[in-house]
Image (cartoon, rainbow, N blue to C red; front, side, top):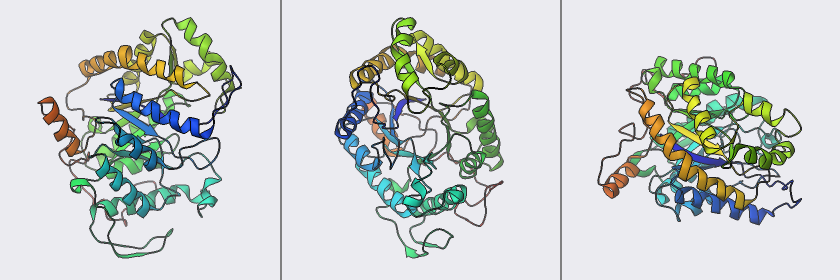
Length: 391
């Protein structure tokens, strides 16, 4: 199982000091946080993609390329790659290039984003969000697997005899997660391709995401990729820790109350009760995170949001120290002990698995032999005439 952090890269005023970081300060803080993630023993750093204030991560591959050059083991991912408004050809080439530079330590999460105005900025119509996600990913999937692609669809100019370069590292494309907050069509899409499904369950009740994950698992098996238990699931989460739970709540409350996303709404206590937000002692964080398995079943990736709402960099780095030293080691041990037989391992590129085996003197399982989660297929995933059910 993989543990890591993700960031939306917001530039938010610290409500306790009134100071707002500059864009330069926030970008550099993000890089510091990513390097700290590897230092404390986390597995994954993921960045969002945004093209509007108050966010700064408009170029994820640039950021992740910087981190790749300064890390050895950290898996570099996205918390959203905008499959609806990015050109699939550019995604294919950018992330294949990053994959080579990072020696395979790359995967990405497809998403539609949550900012309506971004669609017309990139020449698209938000009313076509789901069809764009379906068609663009079908093309991306082929670009990484077929050396020569002929393509014609609704939303971009046709391709004739096109080869995306560079080709994926060792012929194995980056692993893809499909992220969703609300859309069953995206869970269906993830299941159809045998990809991972990431339920970014940071704002809505667990019952909502329980239904999405169950749909994904059921359809994953329907398409012949394995049992429902072998489906690859990731979860989001938010946390803030201090040795004493009362201190954690007191310190975090002003950031929660004034956060642009959920401030001035439900109380901190209500939000903690209804969503995965956990504020308290390390032991309380451990207990709440372990409870996710009871709700969602065994899963492969847990990412935490820790650097938002104006929290200063010093505080975030302190949080990462606690996470890496006191929380994640216990979570690794407990999740492993409770994991049912036959559950898929977290996905890794074969090059990463081989490198880690050579370094550690062991053979480290990646969950699959070809870098994907597909164990068998009853349909041709490159056949764009076959659409996922319900789309």
